[in-house]
Every structure is written in structure tokens, then in C-alpha cells.
Image (cartoon, rainbow, N blue to C red):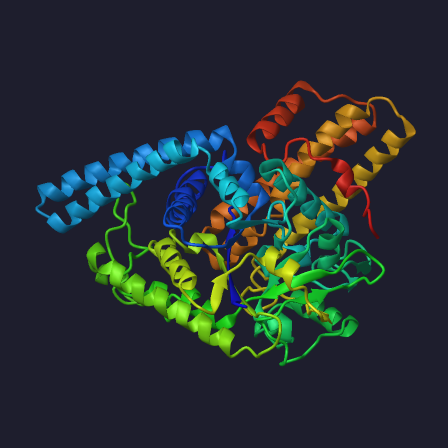
Length: 576
């Protein structure tokens, strides 16, 4: 019986359509589609064509699926590809005029890349990336997991109704796009919170309240597994130095330490699944798979991992106009002016070596993971956009690694859901609070730069819960005129979901697109407040004015994801 390797990717982008294009906005989605999603589909086609057995796990966030399925994306992506082809041609002409032969050759390579991408998208998948993922789901090669609706950071959401809505909408959206319920979920930022008496880490809006564990929301929606970081399995002290720097985090950690049992068990193996069952009187337990740390560092690390190889295409240095890349990493800490010209002919040998090392490492780790009747499983989770986008050659690395596993006598690639069904865990464990973010706790999403965002989110969650509760009471009582209130609150709910995306705090804390993230959260907070004000007027019997009707129509068109979402999800917690 072979041990299993669960290659696990997480594909997600916040809602960017209709919210700018470049440098921040729709081009994030266009770049990921061209450099990650379509190359992944092409690699799977290659494997299928060559008869190579393979299994891959991928989480497609609901908000990403809503965008990829939209006509707005198809128009944006078509324009993007044409723009890139034209930029490559113009670059080639400029390089030729200056006698820069090597750069001219690379520019023609980019022209072929984007032309081939357009052909693959249109001819292979009919202009639908989701059709490609659906195809490999049906063939059994893919395990498609869901994620919270807009990637809301579950441990810090202020209300259980907010957590409930993020998960319920996720499952419903998955059914909409893939015709079946998901078996598993990639929790945003791999973040988990156990059940305990919780109060908001910022402000004093409501008293400490008994909060449900994250796994309870998953179980109630029929989800059977999720993925965590290694330190959360063993209960290690991974909170780092940030507690000393930020009062709100200290308070949150103190309450968690006081009211929960934090396990510490170095014997727990990341190569075994475990049950998590926070409420024995509730529904079924949920399985947890754990990130293998050794195969993580060789891919994640830009300095010590494969992407830091000097031969690979550099992500940061770009040529303008066009934004195309012509230089290689050179050295992991090279300044931009030190980058040397990319040499594609040297890439295959580096990919072969890296893929062989990865396969050998996984085999050694599993062979030393202990003996027994049950096969071990090595879970290797990564952001999908690392492959192809940040590490341009990364998708080809994945394909080569999969071919290596297929030729291995003792290891095979597996889907997480299949492994769970064939080899269910025997042990139930408790998990600590944490994430796979820097420091292992919540610092990236809650710090002195992001506290204001949670002030806005908590205010909106509280207001949404009260308005949704009033809607439900009126509908149950048969009060006339509730349909318009429901429609207005559905728009308010979508603005709240957009606010809750963990991307905004991440971009603020990392300074990678701080102004854009601050603008987006403030915009959705303001729009939520305006729509909630219209709902308040309806509750007093007033009808929206002409400008308010225009606002509602504009918001409904602009933020089209999750159209018709049920506001009742925020009215009460269905499973206390």
C-alpha cells in the first residue's frame, strides 16, 4: 500500500472586477488567469495525454469563482491578452532597433506565450476557466475545495452569524458552479479558533459571548476536512513577538489561554489525519490535515527554496511600457539593477533537479513517518498563485514532480477526500487558536495599522444582524412590503461580505497595496452604511428616493458576486 502526497493549492483573489484595473484591480485576476490557472489546466492536459496518473487538490474561493464565471471577466481578460501581445511586439521592435538581440528574442517569447494562452483559453475551454476545473473534477483528478465566501478571517469575525454566512454561502456557491457540494474547505489563512467566551479585541461593542469553534460551522454545512499549519497540530508556541507590541492581541491571547485547553503534543504526526470535534452533542467531527513543514520550506522560501534559484524569471523587475519581465533572479538578494537577462534554455535542467529533489524528499519523509497498517499522507499546501505567477516556472515544476511521483514505487498523489474516506482517523484532538500567518497567530490581520478596519467591520456586523433579525420577524408575522426590504438587505449583505475579506488587512500590513486596500474597505463600509440607512427608512414606512434607487442599482451591478444572497443568514445562528 503506497503512502500519499496531497499536493494542495489554494486559488483566491478578492473581488477586483469593477474596482480598478492597473496597478491594482482587475489585472490581478488577469495575471493569475494567464500565469497560474490556465497553465495549471494545460499541465493537467499534458499529464492526461501522456497517461500519467495524478491527483491534485485545489481550493477555489467562492469570490474567485464568481468572478471567473462572469461576462465582465471574459471581456477584461480578452482585452488584457491582446494588450500583452501588442506590448510584446512593441518591445521586440524597440529591442531590435537598439541591437539588443537577447531581449528581442525574449519579447517574441512573450508574444507567443500570450497568443498561446488566448488560444488555449478559447479553443480548449471555450473561454471558461471554470469549465477546465469542472472537467478534471469529473475525471476524478481534482479535489476542488471551497473557502469562506469572501475569504473572511474567521477567528476575528465578530459574530457567529458572520461566520455562519461565510460558510453557508461558500457551500451554496460551490454547488452553483460545480454541481455538487464540496467535501473540504481551505480556511482563509488556515486560521482556526476553538470555542470559548470571546469579546471583540477592539472596542467594547458587546459583552463577552460564548462563541462556537470554527469546525462546528464546517460540520453543520457538511464539510468533512480542512488544512492547518504544523504548529497548530502540536500546540507549539508560535505567536512570536507581536503580542508584546499590540494590546488588542495581548487581550485576545490572554482570554484564549485562560478559557481553552491548548494542547502540546510533540508526538502528533503531520503525516496522519485527526478528527476535531468541538461539540460532541452536535454534528459529525471534521478531519484535519496538517502542512508538512519540510516540503513547505523548499517551495515557499524565496531565499532558500527552489524559486530563489538564480536561473528562474525574476518577478519584481519589469519593463515598461507593457510590464513584461526579461530578467532572472540572479541571486535571491540582488538589487533590481543587478538582475541579469533571463536565459530560458537553462530552465529545464533546473526544473528537473528541483522536481527530483522534491519527490525524493517527500519519499524520505514518508518512509520515516512510522510503520503501521495505514498509509501515511504528506500534505503540501501552497497558494496557487505562487506557481506560475510569483514563480513563473512553478507550474512546470509541479508537472515534473507529479510525473516523478507517478513513477515512484512507494508514493502516489492523492485527493484529501479520498484518503479520508479510505483511511478515517482514529484519534480526536483539540486545536489551539492560530493561523499560518507570520507569528502563527493573528498579527498580520490585527495590528496598529489594521485596527480601524475591525472597528468598521464590527459595526457593520452588528447592524446587519439587527436588520436581518427585524426582517425575519416581519416576514414571519406576515407584515406587508417586506420583499423590498429583503432585496435591500441582500445588497447590504454583499457589501458586508466584501468588507470582511482578509485580503485588505494583509495588503495593509505588508504594504504591498496599502492605499488600494484601505480605499476598498472604506468604500464598502460607506456603501454598507448607505444601504443600511435605506433599510432603516423602509422599516419606518418610507420608500427610497430616486438617488437611493440609483445607488442600489449601481451597487448591485458593481459588486455582482453572490446576487440574491439571503439576509436571513445573519438573523440568527441556526445551530447554537
